[in-house]
Image: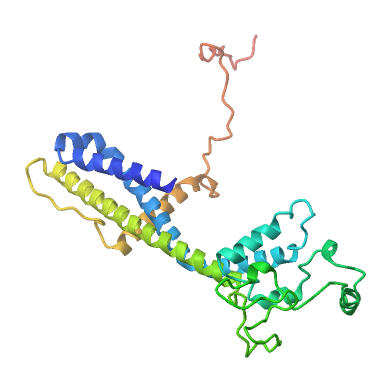
Length: 303
């Protein structure tokens, strides 16, 4: 949508610049140029804000990814629950495609039950002991889903423990060469979306510079052509400017205009300035609005 608006503004700006090169055609666009400049200025400002947001929203994006992945991992096992049945496949595809595991790392899977109850052998004593040993009755294990397996590793990944090496199956995570992806999916997605946002931000900045150049050119053209009309000679040279006075003086002048407009609307609200005839009723003399003639009366008593 923003691109369509930008194309329309630029096309209209080109048309204005082309026509206003002729003094006779400038009269047709004279009243339209100032609203065009104001609208283009606000649109250019919005483009700049959008470009800056692409570079400043990293923290919000990081927090959103963390919370979203945290909730998604909790429901990984709910393959039979409506609305969550495809979540397992989505997370598996995410971990395979981005070569990541868990939220912050593979150890996140150790803290949640990611295996559905329907796939647990409840007659197995080891399974029963694991369920009883957990306060919440969850089946926790030092294992990860198959989608966490590093496809570049030549060693097998144990079904019951994720940290496996080519020659050992101990649980010394610090010294082992793990056969699972060690990067968390939050970091992988953050890098992916950050790259996209930076590319978009750079493109939007280029568009902003182009819009700013169009706005500057139209403003110079407007002021220069108005000076030509004041001189009365279409072939004379004239100067153009962005601001006739300094930025501070221009801001103060516009602020005074706004204040005067506000004061003019409050004149009637000041005590003592009311119209004395405001509440005086008017006489109704009929449709012709002609007052009736008074009958003269004599002050002398009758004899």
